[in-house]
Amino acid sequence: MNNIECKENFEMKNLTSFKIGGCVNKIFFPKSQAEFLTLIKNIESPIILGNCSNIIVSSHGCSRPIICTSKMNNIEIRGTKIIAECGVRGPLLSQKAHESKLSGFEFMIGFPGSIGGNLFMNAGAHNQSISDTLTTACLYDREKDEIVYLTNKDMEFGYRHSILQTGRYIALSAEFDLKRENPEVIKGLMDRNLEFRKNIQPPLTYPNAGSVFKNPENDSAGRLLDKAGVKDFNFSRVAVWQKHANFIINKGEATSEDVLELMLLMQRKVKSTYTIELTPEIRFIGDMNKHEEEICQELYKKIQK
Image 1 (cartoon, rainbow, N blue to C red):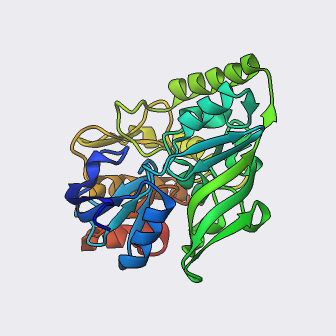
Image 2: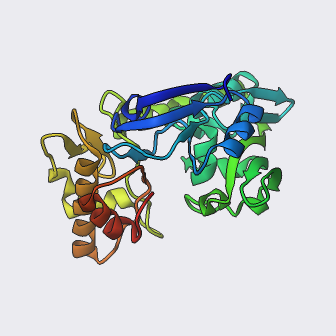
């Protein structure tokens, strides 16, 4: 383990897209599956993170060690097949597919997340999702303490859901089978997707963690939040984004508690207006104080740890 990159007393706000997060005692950055397996077999109860783009890390820090897979980022292209490690960022993979005249990853051009996180959430947009093209996922099985390979069907994909959310498996890499397409057509789709995100979603100059709540069945969380009037929620350190009500921005020096409080206000407003209870898409990671525990209990219907 001595050769594996490790940082001590690391401020997690330096990694998260929300620019929020306290100190973690130790964070490891494996660069290969071999290094990852060494860590997972020698560290007790680690938290596994990728590009830290759809999470809130507690401002109180995290007492558990963290393994960040962002440097496991090899890409291999064989014909129409692409094999990508879990730390590969979506926009890079989208660009590589375009260069190889392969279509299926256009939706990821504006995603800040990594492949591991995209698999975890079955990320998607613009009528495409990562489950559309996945053939096989290479995972670490915590119960069996070994590497396993699951097919697309085995992954139990659903809306913003995969088998990875059970906690048993950790994504290491995945193989995808894309379709040949004219690169100009691919580029056109990528440009339209980027333009849509530019017009609707906050740029990273306004730190955020992406969509706050999942869409309820046959409806849009953004529409419900907008009609409920949450765009009026603008506080000293956090605010609802004016162009899309399903985003929270960090106006500067926001804490995890600030975000949780705003999320709860948003959820309650929709529930009181439409009797619909929105489910958070953003995950909470790390230690929390009593007030945060109470908020998480109501927001997530369980304590997030």
